[in-house]
Image (spheres, rainbow, N blue to C red):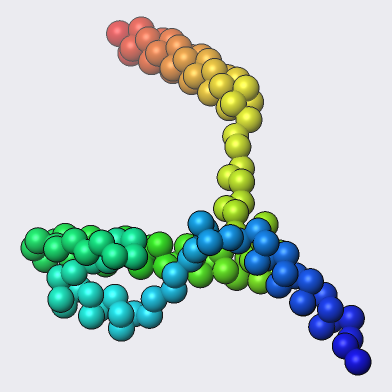
Amino acid sequence: MATSTDLDSEKRRKMQNLLLNDEICVLYHTKKEIKKKEEEEVVFIGENKIEKVKGEEEVLLRGMATQALLREANRSALRAKEYGPQGWLKPRALTTNKRFLARTLQSVELDRKEFEQKRKMLAEKRRAAER
């Protein structure tokens, strides 16, 4: 008899299959495959398209870009395991409170101006006292 966890995982798998249709597909590559592609100076784009890469810099840049994409895909896969299909979406970035930031900057600027004025007045008083 199937346990509740088996049913839950089966239900989760069905939901993931529904949400992740054929249009959305994430491919996982190993580091060996990336190195092999770099050595051959061939980068695969899509399923059947192949583009020749010129020079070592482009190979290096493409390799770095591929690694960055793979890291992001692996992070998304981990989030998907933990949170389900919604885990594939990137988390929202925290937004700054722009009003607070603007007022704080204005306040700091005013304080700095007052400090500079006081410093100038003290310097003038010292000069006057020295004469």
